[in-house]
Length: 136
Picture 1 (cartoon, rainbow, N blue to C red):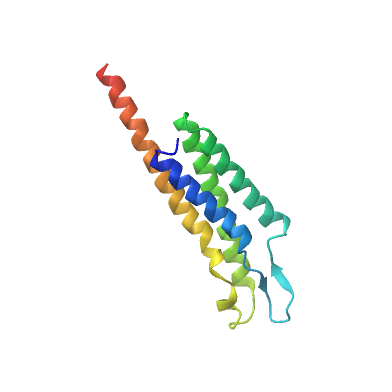
Picture 2 (cartoon, rainbow, N blue to C red):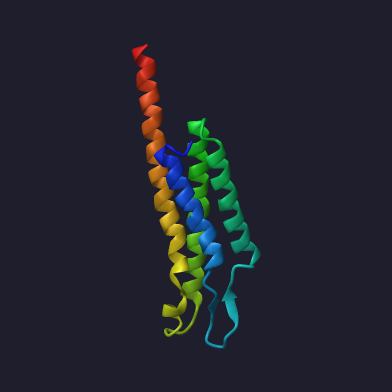
């Protein structure tokens, strides 16, 4: 399981997702009211769904097609999470708060790249298995 590169990519992506929950940027407007934090149901649901899909993909290491589909669903959830972050950060007023949002907003993008690399490795493994089956 751990000797395959796609498993390592998925584990690193899971670490970034869990790290996003720990270092979540709390966005507040000029008056000090919190606009975005990690305890909001939408954000918490997207983070939990992404983490669950990561774990399911790791557990399905023998079924490459299912792992591929689970990684794609995780990519979609991370795109939605990234979209929520961008939307909320663009609706904030004030230029001085823009630099205070933290690096945590980039974690879904890093996770998307890692999952795409994992899917590429899964596809390569699947093609290798199909080519060996053709030889028989």
